[in-house]
Image (cartoon, rainbow, N blue to C red; front, side, top):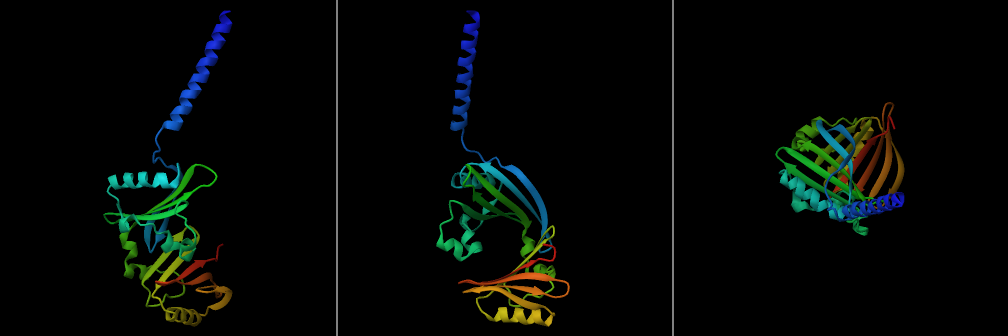
Length: 240
């Protein structure tokens, strides 16, 4: 008889505790408590850039205000009133499809630093993946960017911005240009003068992809024409 009472009480308490725990998990407020996946350090225009990859429970649209609130308390100021930069970086793709619930990119500043925030909503789980990068503002200094340009082909002198990014064995370059076809011609001429041959891979309206190669280097190049500006993206594929 005592055993029946004991086991009945034990089962009741077990079920009750499980219910309490479940209710606590359901009713507990969403928090910005990122779980670090990996951390890297790379060079951006010769300046050190630290990048964290993390995951946080919760939907992107619910989590973003918490992140902004947390960073604002730490004196990080949202740039451009916290505007989403996805359309700027992804171009026409984000104009055709509303990605705001799945992808958002923000920028912040504090003192002599910039911070970028990239968020991606997982469709498979109730979680959001994030990428946070901190780097000094001096990385955007035009003279410093030019002196730290490590690709063997020179950028057009009419460039409005240069980005030379090294992440371990990956080497990426981005050249921003005025809205004109002339800088593309100048770049092609400069590559030919350096002994590079060009192999066209694909071409469509506003975009051209080709391979630059010489005896030592292989570089994948993408010409992209947008409404406001043009860009040339380069990826060294010597070790890929």
